[in-house]
Amino acid sequence: MEKTFPQCGKHAARGDWLPLLRATGADLAALYARADAVRREHCGNAVPIRAIVEFSNVCANDCLYCGIRASNPVPTRYRMPPDDVVSAARQIAAQGTAGTIVLQGGETPGDGDEIAALLRRIKAEVPGLAITLSVGNRPRDVYARWKDAGMDRYLLRFETSDAALFARLHPACTLAERLQCLRDLRDLGVQTGGGFMIGLPGETVETLADNVLLCREYDFDMIGIGPYVPNPDTPLGDQPNAYAGDPDMFFRAIAVLRLANPDAHIPATTAFDAVFPDGRDLALQRGANVFMPNATPGPLRKNYQLYPGKPCIDEDAADCSRCVQARLRALGRPVAQGPSHSLKRPSTGSIT
Ligand code: 5AD
Ligand code: FES
Image (cartoon, rainbow, N blue to C red; front, side, top):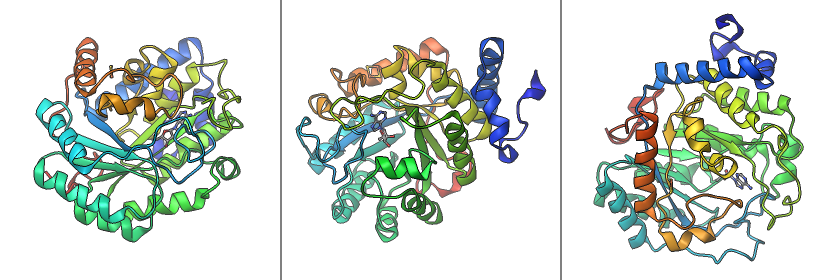
């Protein structure tokens, strides 16, 4: 059985991953077991917790699948005042489970200085908390300014490796521009996270294999992937997930991603819970090693529904913190201590 798995993800090609992305029955169980073993060997059993604060749902873009796209009138738009973001950061640090705050928001060009000031405040007022930022495509000099202000990591999914599909879904940018941003971030020494959605309408299993290969090629520090969930408030809303009849595909994807990227931080992303009641727990047993609970203030959550069925909308930050601890206890996985920087480039963290 062992010899059916590519020994080193680095040198594998599309054809090596396709049979695994089609595995069923005993082969599928063996794939999951192997991915879990590779995760344990390279990342250990402790789970780094990254608390997400969705600090603004204002977005200038119109991505065809996304619930906070500019032309969707449904969400009430908000920007959290800096004081509220800093107090969310304090609360995260006080709870003591998450070593990282992830500031996620829409893409609003022109807010570079405000975000730099926010990063400086969090570093000064909540020392020891690592900061991940995720606010879309920006010019290299803006990323550089944010790094100087204390940004440790950045998340920017490339969404799909198929350039034509990317162009159809993103009126404002090309795949080449997105990938340039990812190279800029890496060159600046920022721990960089890429990733994609699983099952975009029009993708094939070959696209999925190429998505995994692109992650390998960029050697990302973090890789976030999750099922595409049609959102009826978007133009793509009536197009089902490409794997709607085969939900195992979401877990094959995460298992193969782990085999191809043994030492990447791979979160069990929120969208897994939208597709299966215990989807994030299953992902943690099939290749994922990181958990990212929602730490957005409760009342704002209903306005950050990128897709329907997003969990934790009626909860608050304390609920999710308690929930993640219970879930990890049930899985027998301890909470990792400290910021849990990149396993590939541990020295690049701006805090130790
Ligand atoms: N279904 C699943 N994931 C989505 N995202 C945005 N819209 C959807 C959707 N309808 C994901 C994108 C983005 C991340 C913040 O959320 O991959 O990068
Ligand atoms: Fe939010 Fe379980 S993670 S309630």
